[in-house]
Length: 157
Image 1 (cartoon, rainbow, N blue to C red):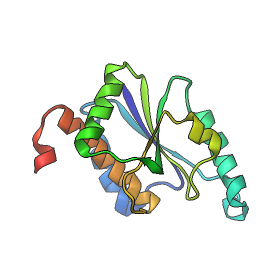
Image 2: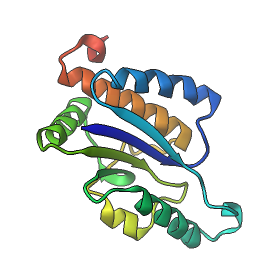
Image 3: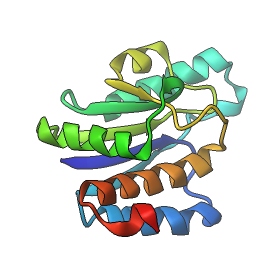
């Protein structure tokens, strides 16, 4: 199974880049992994929220393959413990999922079409985090889940 972490927006800020790269490299010891940053549409600042979500949604949907299992980060999604998240990833591996895609939408969320395409909606917290920080949190949590699956000590350090 390949893990794909995908986000709408700009490249990683320097304060995030180092951590994301470190955890992504560590994840690579368990699963093939890649980051994909989807650029914001041209003139995004001039677009109405609905139009921006629509354009971002079209780009997101074009980037997905038919059999991708899409985990959408959404504030209304289900919250999981670290152990529960590890079980979730293991279950996808057991199902022979080809690509497990973690998707961070734009600042206004995602279009209804992307929402419907998602196989699972996951909420990190009831708190709101900056998108750049969410990238780092996801990378760390995926690594933590991998270490839990392999019964390694990282989770309890």
